[in-house]
Amino acid sequence: MYREIYGKNPDNVAFCPYRIAPLGAHVDHQLGAINGLAIDKGIYIAYGLKESGICELRSLNFDKRAQFHVRDIPEHKVGDWADHCRAATKMLGEEYKLKYGISAVIEGSLPIGGLSSSAAVIIAFLSALAAVNNISLEPWETIMMAKAAENKYVGVNCGKLDQSCEVLCKKDQLLYLDCKDDSYKLIPWKGKEFKIAIFFSGLERSLANSAYNLRQDECKVAAYDLMAFSGQEYGKFSDTVLREVPREVFEDNKDKLPEPFKKRALHYFTEFQRVQEGMKCWESGDIEGYGKLVFESGKSSIENYECGCPELIKLYEIMTETDGIYGGRFSGAGFKGCCMALVDPKKADEVMSTVEEKYLAAFPELKGKYVSTLCNSADGVDLTGGKRE
Image 1 (tube, rainbow, N blue to C red):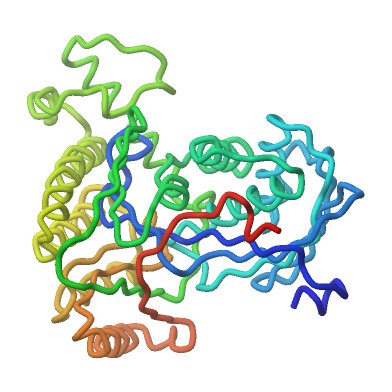
Image 2 (cartoon, rainbow, N blue to C red; image 1 turned 120 degrees about the vertical axis):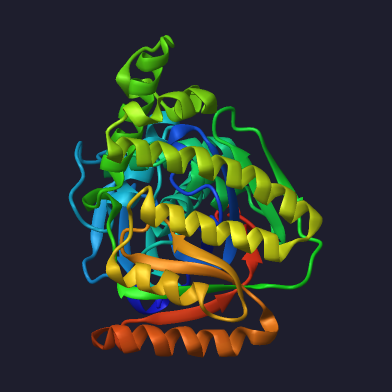
């Protein structure tokens, strides 16, 4: 496609994988701990250097073409799909002198929603733009630059879960990341084989337009109140997170909180515990135990974090009743998008057909929009921007 559009072959192809986070949902922005796996589907960017400094972008998933200069990014987002690329360029340009632009064709290998596609676009584009400008990015530099792109330009107050998974993960290894101090480890899998199933609801999502940012504010209010109730010192509201609140403080004061804030805090503390227990299950090769925790995480996301929509909640319920699924939950923030599941490979075909049949029976209008696929774990992004000569 690049050759059809630009009349020449691309210089390189950058790739950033999507990710799943089986445990650690909605706690990264509160400086909790998370689990993550990169998968072998993601964002591809075929690109070539442009000496003019212009970035000319085409997407195979969206119609509109985008064009901008690397040193002349609009101060505020435009409101289209290319804002993620503008954001990446702006953040890279604040740290490095950019001379060259790129001509690029961007394609996502799965439907949008729930697999951190926005972070994958930003990271893939960062790696490509850095490569043509002879900039070598380090992993944590990339993570924080991509996070800043979403926070400061796109307008999503995300934590670092998505970016960390897409940069740090290795095939067949679970990422355990403590978002408070950025310490992490990769835990090799030594148990029985499993597949990763992705079930797209047929509904796309936008975190910037969802209750995602509101939920973060509710978590902060809960933390602020708990600190005040217990006499704990606190500072600016914007810097307040539940990680600074001891679990016993929550248990002693939870009934003083308004119900919504109590529920958000309950999800945080129980999810943090599930991540610790999940790490032990993974280390011992206990896929059944790990999967059970993933199902519990999904339930808490629905009941305590109160995210999801009727379609995703139905998908979750179907997964809990389907033989061959070890565990599953919403993937991503849970506002539309998709669900993920850890699946017994021997029962994978039956699982995929059963979930589809039951889901479309409940939502027949989504036939043709609902999509499911099986995938495997994968390495994180290649920060050279693709294969370099």
